Amino acid sequence: MGAITLLSGCGVLKPYTPPRPPAEGPLTFYVSPDGDDDRDGLSEATAWRTLDRADQVPFRPGDRLRLKGGARFPGGLTIGAGDAGSAPKPVVIDSYGTGRATIAPRGSAGIAVYNTAGVEIRNLAIVGDAKAQGSADGISFFNDLPGGKRLNHVRITGVDVSRFQNGIRLGAGPKSSGFGDIRISDSAVHHNQDAGLVTYGPQFKAKDPRYAHEKLTITRVKAYGNPGDPTADDRNTGSGIVLGSVRGSTVQQSLSYDNGAKSSARAKEGPEGIWTYDSTRVVIQNNKAYRNRTGSRVDGGGFGLDNNVSSSVLQYNLSYGNDGAGFLVYSGEPSNAHKDNVVRFNYSWDDARKLSWYGGIVAFGDLLRNLEIYHNTVILRSSGADRPPALRLRNGMSEVAVRNNIFVTNGAPVVDSDTNYTQGLVRLQGNDYFSTGDWKVQWGKTRYSDLDAWRKRAGQELLGTVLTGSTADPCLAGAVAPVTDAAGATPLVSQCADQLEGAVTLQAVGVNPGQVDYFGARLSTAPSAGAAQPRAEE
Image (cartoon, rainbow, N blue to C red):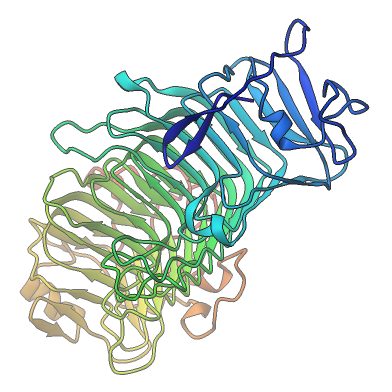
């Protein structure tokens, strides 16, 4: 199966490739512990015994390799440029019989796909060992073909991948495109060292932006227990799902939790639950990220739009109990490429539990512009002298609007901005700011203890001459009770949203809020602050 083995992106020729059986059309091959490598492998009764034997036969469009369910197969599989699948007739690797088959390589990748596509991987467990955890990927797709040729049709579904450096990784060489039409679903990537699922591509160039991968959809993927590398001081490790160099991607209905606990204490970049960088048109929606950690003094949050991200959306997500920010929008490069992004209808509860210089929602960075943050609900309950705010704003931004959110703390500033932003750069309108302790807003070097004073001196919470915003109690059980159910956000739903005043009609200020709130309910024409909205009249 293939004449090329992927090893750190390099091709290695195999010494011998046996001919295919003399049969026309697509073939189905079987592998079973009870099989015999001297047979033809074309039926359950004449199955091969080892993956090594299966790995010697070149695949053609429509071929299938089936491994006996419940059995464990030492070794790995490679699919190289000599193995040709296609979108209408993909090469399929899956299990047969009862349960998943397990691929168990020794210090190498589980399934490595190099310079080809039209491949589907289904219903398998792929388990590495101590050596693989430091140097190999469970499932790897890599393209370094010259000329920018993108390879289409990748399907990964129903897999469980653990004990590798990365669970699933898709990459492209420095002068290459990667993969297109990619769907990864109903899978678990856990207890891998660096990340559960990661994509990457060539170095980003703001003046000539190109993206390795496109049309990527990730659905119902669990990324958990990926601890990070305590020796990796030069890079971030320990994330759940990381999307780099993608155009047109969706991450949905997925979970990322308990990642990053062993990431390096000296790294300048840390892990996040689900995040993207060097990408455009990414939608991260209907996911949950919780109890993600960082070993250093940076990151460790739930969701992130990082360097060079444009035209992307974080929406309908739940974040809680993370070390860093619930939702981080950040640009560390003065590239002018971080722009036109939206954070809306999300929940953050008790994030920034370790790193108080973050907050529930955090936005800052060099030349970050045109960011919309609206209809989110953030509750920060914390103890100690240094408490994180619900909303943290820092320097470098322009064309930022923060509208119709609920921000709740137990005495920390509801908003903390390092910069004394004017409305020309950052505009706050229609938000509800509530504290169960002393109410305060930190705006530049000035601390305000009431909303009217902040309006008057900073010019915020005004729509023309109309006063907007409020300090009313939003009636959230989560302000005093813990969120313990990862499946829902009930303690974060306002019990008096229809009584909150001061929200603005987003359509009137040129913003389309979409059709539904966090819970999928159709939006009312009378908006209220927060992620859960009053129900529209039928």
